[in-house]
Length: 364
View 1 (cartoon, rainbow, N blue to C red):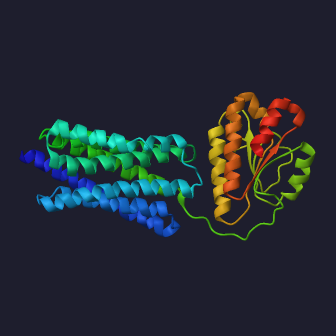
View 2 (cartoon, helix red, strand yellow; view 1 turned 60 degrees about the horizontal axis):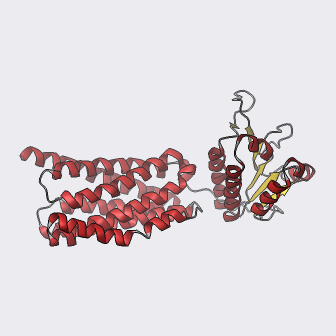
View 3 (tube, helix red, strand yellow; view 1 turned 90 degrees about the vertical axis):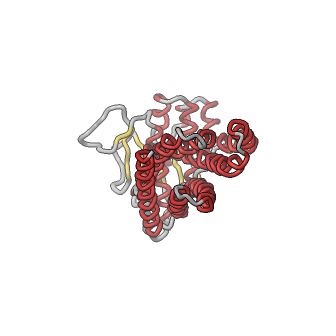
C-alpha cells in the first residue's frame, strides 16, 4: 500500500510541475501577443494545478474545493478553444454544435447510470457530476480545435486528440472512482494525458504563426474585399498595378512574376533548383494553410492582402470539381474576414457554361 501511495504522490508531483510550467509559459506568450485564447489556456492550467493539489489532500473540504476547480479548468479549456477559433476567423462547424446539443440529456443519463452502478447518491451528486460536466466541456473544446487542423497541422491535431481523450477518460473515473483497484490506473492515465496536453499546448502556442505581427501603414489598393474573376488581359493590367505589393500567388506561368511577390509554382514535378517554393496541385490543404496565414498576417498588420490563382484549370485536372469549389470558397471567406482580395485568373472559354456559372455564384 505504501508503494502505491508513493507512486500516486510521484505522479501528482509530476502533474503539478507540468501544470505550473504550462501556466507560466503560456501566460508569458499571452504577454507577448495578447491573444485571449492564450490567457484562457494559461488560467485553465492554474485550475488544473489546484484540482490536483486539493483532491490529493485528506481533508474532505479541500477535496470538494478541488472538485469545483475541475469544471472551472474545463470551462477555460472550452472558452480558450472558442476564442482561438474567433482569433483565427474560423466559424464553428454546425456538426459540432449539433453534437453539443445532445449533451444535456446525455449528461442526465450518465448521472443515472453512475448512481445505479455505484448506489452512492453523494458520490453521484458531487464527484460524478463534476467529472461528467467537465468531460462534456473538455471534449467540446477538443472538437472545436479540430476545426483548425488544416492550418496548424500536427500541433493542433495532437492537442485536440489529447483534450478529447482526457474528457472521455473522466467517464470511467466517475464509474470506478470508488473502487480501490482503479486509483492507480485512473490517476496514471490522467497524469499521462495531462502531461501530453501540456506538451501539445506549449508546442502550439510557441509556433511563430501564433505570435503577434507588427503594424504597418495601410496600403492603397483599389480592390474590394472578397473575390473576383479576371481574364488574362485584365490580369496583365492588374499585375502592373500590384507589382509593388507583396501578393501571394499560386501560378503556372512564371515568366513574369513581380520580384516582391510570394510565388508558389504549382506542379507535379519536385523542382529543387530554380523554384524552391513549389506545391503539388492536389495539396489543396497546404495552399489553404498558406493562404490563411497570409491573410491573417496582413489583416493583423493593417494591410490589404491579395492572393492570385492563375491556374484554376490546372487544379481542376488534378482535383474533383466539388473539392476545388470548397477550396475556393474557403479562400473567399478568408479574404472577406480579413479585408483581403482573392483574384482568380480564368479564361471563360476553358470551362463549361454550367461550371463557370457555378463558380460565378460561389464568388458572389
